[in-house]
Image (cartoon, rainbow, N blue to C red; front, top):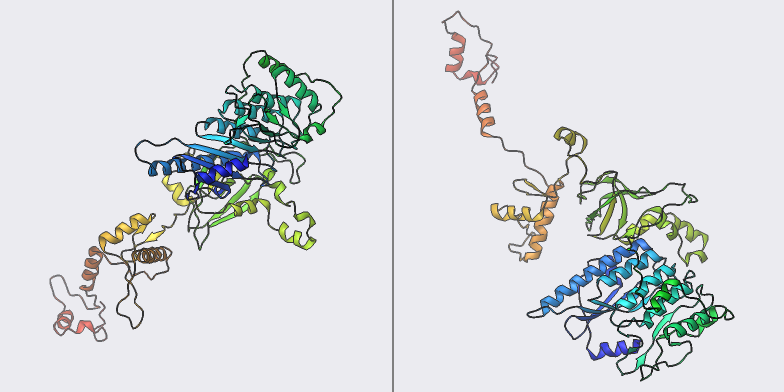
Length: 542
C-alpha cells in the first residue's frame, strides 16, 4: 500500500503546499497537493509524544484550521466554482497515552469530515484502548465509502475478542463491499489490521466463528496476499503473531448478542455521543496531597510576546496550572489579570495531574545523578508552557468568575483598586497616547508629526526604504510611551498666561497710606522715577 501511495504521488507530481503554520501542531503535519484540484495527501506524525485524551480536541482544531487554509488556497487558485476537497489522511498516534475517550473524539471528527477526508491508515498501537475504541473504529470503517487500508491496534492490553469481532465484522459487512480493496495495479488487497498482544483469549475460535457466521476471509500467514479475483482475496490480513497470542484449545467463540442480531439482519447499534475529553481528577494518592481540580469554566485568550521583553508574566506553578502573580505593563496581556490560572496552552494541559508523568522521560532514567538533579529544578508545568511559548498561542484561563459574568465595577472602585495600564505608543511631538499602532500611524501622517531621521555626522542625505521608516517610527513611539525620550514642558494655557500677566502688573509697597481721598507722595515719586523695580530703596516687591 505504501508503494502504491508513493507511485501515485510521483505520477501526479505532488507539490508541497506552503501554508503559514497557524498552530503548534502544524510542525507535525505533512500536506502535499496533487495535480487534481482539491486533492491532497496528509500525514500526521505524532508517535511517542506522550499525548493524552485532553490533547485531541486541540489536535482536531488544528486539523480544522489546516482544512480551512487548504480550502482557501484551492479557492484562490481555481477559477469559477470551487473544487471540493479530497484529502487522503494517514494518522499516526502510536506510543501515547490515549484511551477510549480520545479515540472516540478523533473518530467523531473524522466522521464529520468524511466528505473531505478519507482515512487511509490509522495507527493507535501501544496506547490504552479497550473495546469501546474498537466500536468507534468499526463505525468509521462501515461509514467510510472506501477502505481503511491499515489499522494498528497491537499492544493495547485491554482489547478483547468482543472488540475485535466488532471491527472485523464491520469490514466483512461493509455496505459498499470495500474489502478487499482494489489497488492501482488492478489487484484486490486485504486490509492490514494489527491485533496481536492483546487480551484476545481464543483468536482461532473467534476467526472460526466469524468465518462460519459472516463469511470472513482472513489471512494469518506471511507473503503476498493480493489476488486478481475479488472472491479469492481475503478481507483482512492479521499476520502470524495474532494466532500465537491466545489459547487455541477452546473451540468456537460465542459472539456478543448485539453482533448476533447484526448477523441476523439487524442494524448496527447506535453508539453514545462522546463529550470533549478532559483529564482525570487528581487521585488521593498523589504526591502533593488529595486536592481535586474544581470544575470551573475556562475562557480563551491569545498570548502576546515581544521579541525583547517576552510575555511580561510572572507565573507560579500550582495544582490547577500556572498562576499569574504579576503582569508587566509591556507588552501587556489584554483580558488577563493577576490571580488567573493558565490551565492549558495550545490545548496542552498545564495542571499537575496531566504533567505529573513528564518529570522524567524514557531516556532520563539512565543518566547520572547530577544531570537528573539539574533537570528536576525546572517543573513540568513550566516546561510544557515553554514548549508552546510563541506569539498568538491560545491560553485556556481559569478564573473564579468568568469575565463575561463579572459585574461592572464602579468608577471609584476601579480607579482605586487597579492601576491604569500604560499605552503602548505615544506621539513624540504632541505626546498623545494610543493603544493600537494603526491609530498612532494615522495620527503621525495626518498631523505631520513623523519622527525626523537623525543623519550621521558628515552626511547630508540618507536613503531609507518604507519598511525601515515604519520600524523607526514604531520604535520611537514605543520609546516615547515607555518614557525613554525627554518630554518638553507642558505649554501654559491662555488663562494661565493672562493671570500671570495680571499678577506681574501689581505693585506691593510698604508706603504710608493717607486718609480717605488723599494720595501717597512716596508712591507717586517711586512710580515717576521708575524706582519701584529696584526694591532696595523703597522696599517694594513685584
